[in-house]
Image (cartoon, rainbow, N blue to C red; front, side):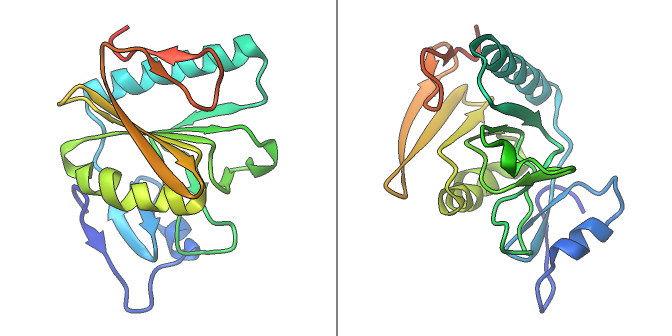
Length: 184
C-alpha cells in the first residue's frame, strides 16, 4: 500500500485483522477499512518532535496527570467497537484508565495531525468527524505547506474551529496558560 489508499473487505476488517498485519505495515483501521499511511517527511518529523517536546515539558512543569504520545501509537477510539484503530501524529491522554499495555482505549483529550499531501482528505474530513464522534476535546490540524493550524474544540458534541498561522501563539484549550507557537 502507498499514500492513503483504501483496502476494503466485503465484511469489513476488524481489530484482529489489524493486529495480524506485519509490524512494518503502517495503516489505520477506520470503520472496517484500512488506510495506508505514508512515512512522514523531515518537516513533519521536526514539527512533531517540537510539539511533543513542548507539550511534554508543560505537562511535567504543571504536574498534570496527562501523557503525550507520538505515532506510531495505537488509539482505539471506541472501546466497544472492533473496526477502528488510528495512530494520530500526537495524542494527549489525561485519563490514565484509558492507557493500556500497548494502546489507548477511548478518546484522547487532544489530538494533533500534521498534514502530508497524501493525508489531506483523511485529516480534514474523515478523521475530523471520527474524532468529533469519539469525543476528542481538542483537535489540531497542522498544515506545514500552508503554515496554518486549524484548531477544533468540542462543545456540545460539535467542533468549533479557529485558524492560526505558524507565527501566532496558539492557546491550548485543555491546558490553562499554555500557548504554542509552531515557529517559536
